[in-house]
Image 1 (cartoon, rainbow, N blue to C red):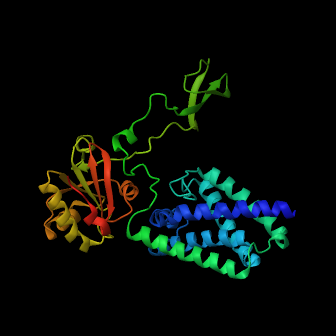
Image 2: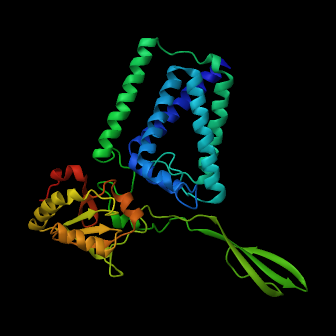
Image 3: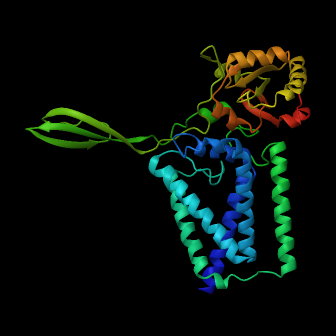
Amino acid sequence: MKYLVGVIRIFVGILFIISGFIKLNDPVGFSFKLEEYFSQGVLDLPFLTPFALAISICVVIVEVMVGVMLILGYKRKLTLWTLLAMIVFFTFLTFYSAYFNKVTDCGCFGDAIKLTPWESFTKDVVLLILILVLYAGRKYITPLVNSKMTFTFLGAALIACIGYVYYVLNHLPVIDFRPYEIGKNIEEGMSTPEDAPKAIFEYKWKFNVNGNEEIHITNGDYPTVNGEFIDVETEEIQAGYEPPVHDFTIEQEGEDFAGTLLQEPKLVMVIAYDLRKSNLEVFKDVKTVTDRALQAGYKVIGMSASGPDQTDALALEYNLGFDFYFTDETTLKTIVRSNPGVLVLEKGTIMQKVHYNDLEHLKFD
């Protein structure tokens, strides 16, 4: 039992640290996932939506810290009860998402590792069992180092977490796990390889055969049955390949200009997913930067999910020298974790991407 607890202790501790760090790298993205959980039709807790970012920061820091505390063997009772409370809550959340098909990606490992709801639930059940084993053998969880070293490690971990989250909130995630990272080509991300797996569907055909109802199952072909057709039910039993970039459009008056604009050799995208939530004062600096880009021969466009009334008013107020196009809000949130944020592209390939705090770092050759 002693050795079993020792192995599980290290494994669970490292897993919580890794999971917490991935979300700590992108707390804004995790807050979007929490907003999805808080929305009507899921947990129906809309009053928590304004606090989603603060909650996400607290959760991920606690997740990292309890992992460190478990490995160090610090305050084992507090650590184990915190782990139990977190994993019970996460297990309920993933089961709810999987059973009712509410949230298709739990966000457990951010954008680094995508898990289906049932995979997330299975992972949490395994973790719950392991943590229960730790609780049963809690007497074997002893301090790894002396008190002075323990406090040093804990203090360093907490300072590192706070410093790291402060940096990524005021800039961009240090590690970009999304399909819009610098160096990626958006058009290539939308393409489907010829050998990509296709979706497989199961068809349940109902027939009336001599007064009896019969069901014949195929993978698409109409069955040869000497009877009267009643109905057919279709179920996807194996998902097909989904391109990493999907639902990407650049629309204006109902027409999609993505194909044309992604061929531009010099393109600047100013992205503001929701102007009601944007830092509007920053558009003074956006004006300066985009004017410089226009003078250097770049085509500049704005991309927002806000309506034309808002985008036109913004362009007029700050005398912006470019037009806005409509793009899905979720897509814009995925592209850049800044509102607004700026991208520089070369024929669809992302060359630069910055937070509005780093506009001065943009270069236009």
